Length: 173
Image (cartoon, rainbow, N blue to C red; front, top):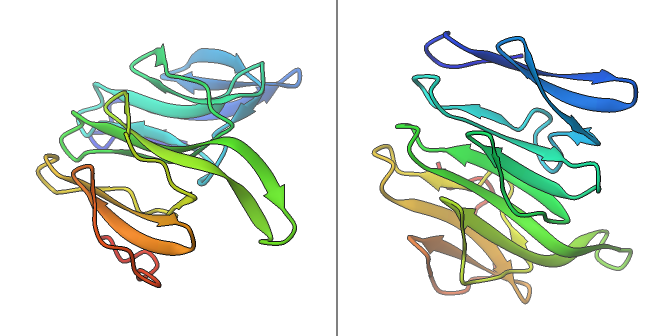
């Protein structure tokens, strides 16, 4: 169960007849094949004033997507992290396309990107840092850590920085 910060709204996932529904203020949204998906079990984000809602789900065609203010976004193989700016005006999430399990790397591989305010990033990566999507406190700036070719960078305001051998795990806070 997730409450909006002001306590005016709530949402939770429920399973009924092998389908999943997001209940928002007691009203069902769905059905979906699976809740959340990717990282984080719930994938539900309210704006602080409770006016906006974004959540991640897996549709009945088994694609992952984010629904923002009732509007479904594009379908992806997976949706990972989902964040909303502190002022509730901006939404971002990381997603993967052409995802497959690599025995050699012992993890999923594919093409990963970030969707910010409904727009796909012009850059794709081999990975996006877990829980590394972050807005500045005023919601204007946005950053994340990413992997490309076994090297790592920090992307700030859609500008990738230099590549490094590593970037501190969960260091963008």
